[in-house]
Length: 173
Ligand SMILES: Cc1cc2nc3c(=O)[nH]c(=O)nc-3n(C[C@H](O)[C@H](O)[C@H](O)COP(=O)(O)O)c2cc1C
Image (cartoon, rainbow, N blue to C red; front, side, top):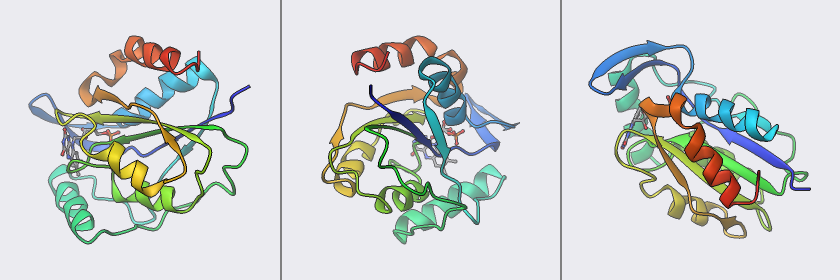
């Protein structure tokens, strides 16, 4: 049987939802990952920065831009000891400036994904997957990277049907 790991980055606190700023306790990507976990029973790992971005949206935007420009690899709170037991990694993240948050690069570069299948999922507010699928392929040269699923962040709680369809199309349900 396929063993699945859901690895995700998500930020709570202040975010922008269809024209308004709001503070939330659970980020959009984490909401979608909860749905995936309920559907698949997969293990999950949260990619968390040791020095997280600001809870204030406009500050976070600038910090993330600076990290992107610097090609930063922010240190993480923890790493899985190994990903050997997993054949499939559902990699979920928000679109930050057209790609993944730099912390997701830190995670990807820590392991050898040769022979593994990666399913990218990107929550966003209009830019879809951006260049993230290309960036994952570059960071994980030996992996099979499937077509990603873009989800509108503010619709995260209503994404069950599209998530289900995508998981089924990839033989995971
Ligand atoms: C630093 C930052 C950069 C972002 N850049 C983009 C972007 O380039 N394109 C886009 O569509 N949305 C962008 N967004 C919106 C997020 O992708 C969207 O709100 C996402 O669902 C947030 O996920 P989270 O709540 O799990 O962290 C950005 C948000 C932040 C905080």
